Length: 431
Ligand code: SDX
Image (cartoon, rainbow, N blue to C red):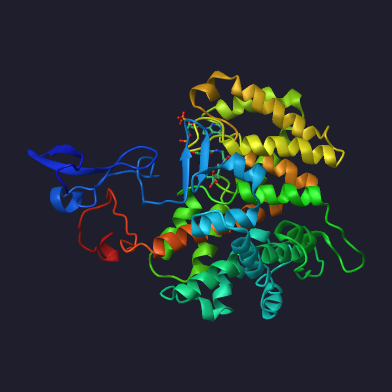
């Protein structure tokens, strides 16, 4: 600790402890409590990590009060409007926007890794056809460590790089295969002449029986959805990937853990739950009933796609997706889609309701995304797999950052124990 080091004083049991304060380039200061237990014999207590920084990072920053999301300093609305997903992948992975040559090389490397090992086709066949595509993705991505042994040694920087490229390249192929398998259609191989988003639409919607031409405007909308879901600080699934990686587990297993966590309806599963909620509401006339249910503490119903741990202002991604929903539905000639009307009226009603105003509940990334995806032809079961393939670059970028951090050590939280203290075994005849 230097003389200029800012500190906080903690008085406890007649002792005073100095806690170093670290100041970030943006956001709140942090108290360094790493030596607290050794010095003061106490733990801090923060279930849900509402006030806890689990790491330092230079990748993504969210200002929840201002509704700002930056990737390596670039605002998400600028990236969504001016960049494209693979360029954002490069930015997240390497920290800077690529030159034209760097981008071409990166896109070529990703393109040449989009096929999966042919034996994986058989692996898919072990699943029931009606398995949720997220269940298939968790299994298949975890199994990648059984197919790509030459990129599982995390101590080798080259293998880390190959694993990162393989995951970014193959997740769309695996997600599309999960979809095709669930509808009983043959797998469609990736095509190197298509860009990342167009290739995904091709693998999902083309069939051998006829030609399929990807609509460039839909491909652009798909690419924008990928970009808007790419990374988001230390959210639950990213924290899962970091914790799994801290034991030295291989990257494929760690990403599978992230996919499993993302599936939950409080997290990435909210896009599917939100569209199902909008269908259940059905018409604008029913909105008041559901708003009251969302406010009723005795009713487990929540407005899916609303609220966020960090954003206490509009989620900037939701703003972009709302604009994109209007564009895509107009392009598809379904601008009067009743679900979009319900969503817009639900947002308007909630944002004018004291409960939502007081609790600072706004639409999040999952509120409008499902409307776009359904209009594009995806079933609700494919919404979270699309979130997962989009977020893979964020998970991998955070994984790379952590693995490369010399301070990296296994994550092992402590607890507030409220169970029985030591007691002796009682023979069954005496119980
Ligand atoms: C994602 O972390 C990330 O960055 C995640 C994500 C990413 O890109 O990785 O942004 C993606 O997961 C977005 C969130 C998707 N989830 C949903 O849309 C599900 C619905 N929303 C929630 O359940 C909730 O808002 C969370 C889980 C998103 C946030 O939960 P918090 O931060 O733990 O807040 P909370 O549950 O403590 O809620 C605070 C209050 C509570 O009321 P009180 O107990 O204070 O009286 O707000 C209420 C809640 O009851 N509340 C809601 C609500 N969300 C919170 N009430 C009605 N409807 C809601 N949606």
